[in-house]
Amino acid sequence: MLKGYRFPVEQLQSDRNWQLIQNARFYLIKRKGRQWLRVLQEYINLPEIIRIYSLEEARNVPQIIPSSTYPTRLQNIYVPTLLKTPQHKPRKVNLATEGRWYAKISQKGNSPIEVPIDIPKEVANIAPSPVVSLHRTRTKQNSPCSVTREELIVAAQEMDDKLSQFGQQENYRNRLENILFQLYDPESNNFHQGNQLNVERLLHIVGLLNVGKSTLLEILIYLLAKQGYRCGLMVNDVATSVRLASLFCHKLEIPAAPVLGSKRQEQLTKVYEPILKSEGQEVTKGGMHPAWRWFIPVCPLLALVQSEDKWEFGNEPCHKLYEKVPVVENDNSDDEDLQESDYKQYTCPFYYKCPRHHLEHDIATALVWIFTPASFIHTRVPRQGFEQDLTFAEAVYRECKFLFVDETDRVQIQFDEEFAPDEVLVDASRNSFLNKLGLNLATIYNSDRGDMAGDRFVAWTSAHYHTQNATNRIYHLLLTHSKLVAWLGPLPFTGRSLFARIIRDLVDPPNITVSAKPKLTRQQIMEERRKRIIEADHGRSTKCPQNAELATKPKSTN
Image: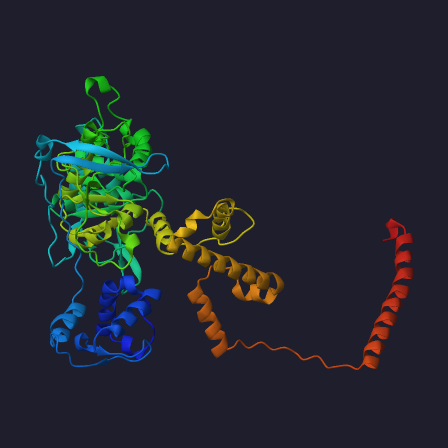
C-alpha cells in the first residue's frame, strides 16, 4: 500500500480509507520497501506502555491497547493527522550575514572545490527583506468564464494597435475574423455555428493545421489577463516560451514571464539566435532585447570571492553558502545520504537585489506564466514570493484560474516520456541500459576496489550482479523457447503487467485445441515411410515424360 497501488480489497473500496492511506504514505515514504520491516521491528521493541498497538511479530494483525502515556493521542493527534491532507513545507530565506563564508563549485566534471567568500557589513545589509511578493488572483471558487466572438475581435484589435507602436504590422484581428467558430453539441453529437466560447473545466479546441488555434489562444489569454485573471500557458520548447513571454510583457503590456529550469546556460544558447539577437544589434548605442533581463549573467558575489577558482554562469551558489559551523539541530531522517551537507546552507545577501534573479521578480507579479512540459513538472517556485516549497504544477493549481496547452500532441509526447518512460534493457549495442551499466562497472576490476568501503556501493554492486544474472537466464529462455517470445509479444511490459498476464492465464487459460496424433508402432512407421517413398518415385516417373513433351513442342503451336 505504501507504493501507491489501490489493490482491489474490501478495505480500500472506501474513498475515505483510500484518502487515509494516501496521507499515511506521505509520512511513511522513507519507510517503504525493506525499511518497513526494520522500523516495524523497532516499534515492536518499544515498551508497551508508550505504544498504541500490541504487536508481537511483523506479520500479526495489530490490536489497539490502552496506553497510560497520553492515552488520547490516537483520537487527538493520529486520526486528525491522517484525515487532513499534509501541508507543503514552509520555506524561509536565511540570508548570509557579515563574515567569512564558503561555497563549493565544480567545473567540467571535476571534484568540487571550496572557495572562500568575505561578505562585508555593507553587503550584508543591502537588502535584508523581499522587494516583491506574490500577486494573488485566485479565489476558492473557480467559476466558469464566457467569452464572445465580438470581445475577442476587440481584444485582437487592441493587440494590433499596441504592436504597431513597435513597427510590427501584426494582423491578429484579420486572422481571428477568418476563423469559423463551431461549437460541439453533445445532444446532437455534432458541431454548429456559435459566437460564445464557454471556458469551463476541460475544453478542447481542435482544427486543421495553421487554421489559427494558437492565434485564438494568444488573444484569449490577452483578454483574460487584462481582466485580472492569472493564466498559465504550456508550449513545446524554451524559445517559444521566451518569445511569447516577451511579446505579452514588453509589447502588449501584460505582466508575463517564462518559467525556466536551472540550466540557464543551455536555455540562453537556445534563445540567443532566434530571439535575443533579433533586436538591439547596436549594443554600443544601448540597444538590447528586453528579454535579456531574464538571462543577465552578472553575479555580484563573484567580486567577493577570495580565490582564483570561480563559478561559471548557471552554476551560482545562490542558496548554498555555508559557514564552517556544524549543524547542531537533530535530523530525524533515517537515511544519512539524504543530507546534502554537514553545514547549514544560507542564501546570498544580494539575492533580493541581484540582477541574476530578475526572472523570479517577474514570475511573482506576472499574470501570464509560460511553461515548457519540463519546467511545468520539475521546476520549483522561486524562494522570493512563495512561502512554501512547490513545483509549478502545484503552483498552477493554486494560483492560476486557467491553464492553456498549445500544440498538445507534442506536449503529450513529452509527458509520456516523463511519466511512462520505456527503456531498452539489452540489445546488440553498447547503448542499452544494462550493457552500459556492465561496461561502467568493469572499471572496478582494474582498480584496488577501494570503492567497496561504502556500504551502499556494495549493496548496489550486489543488486547489479543479481540483475545481470537474472537477465542472462531470461535471455537463455527467450533464445531457446520461441513460444515464450510469442507470448511476450512486441509491446512494452512491466513487472506488474507480466504478473497480471500470468495470473490471468492461470485462472482463465486460453482455449487452445491441439489434435492428438495417434501413436504408431514401429512396423506402422516403416510402412508409412515406404508408402511415401513409392508415391514420391511414382510422381517423378509420371511427370518427366510430360515435361519433356511440352519442352519439345514448337512455340507456334502453344
